[in-house]
Image (cartoon, rainbow, N blue to C red; front, side, top):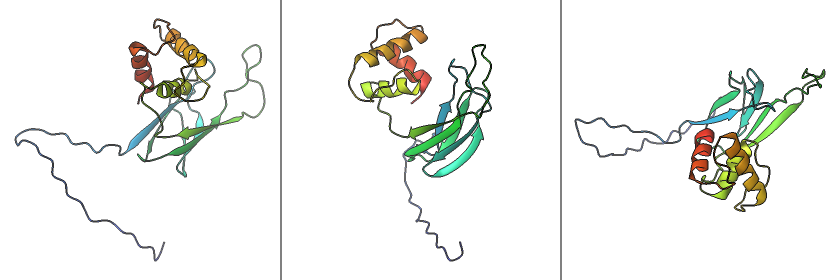
Length: 179
């Protein structure tokens, strides 16, 4: 707006040691950060070309999911909250045909930058919840619901079903979930 004043801070120099005649790679961490979400139907099939609205820290964007039902958005590295609004999968009759009527809207509240390490029970629970396998509190309690969710994940992935978040299960969950 007319009359607004923009302040740009002075450049801060930083020296990084490195041998000459060598190639060095420097990366600025966290800028930009990417948010990856994949929307699946009740049969765990992708929901392609689905209209959505995503709001990250008050900034709204519209888009469509890609052929794999994925949404990828650049977000600020310090983003804390978000909301994703999209159409619910259609209700089906007994023959698998969509029922008439306006599709319902689903809203997913996003807590960004709030995921504990996978080695902690709460980190494992959060990732299982993101896959729809766990619906309880995200805490450090290794209860029966958590063990059942771990067993369900192990079954889906063809791992030995132990109900324990062993190294192989953690690695598989990490590779599928990311972060």
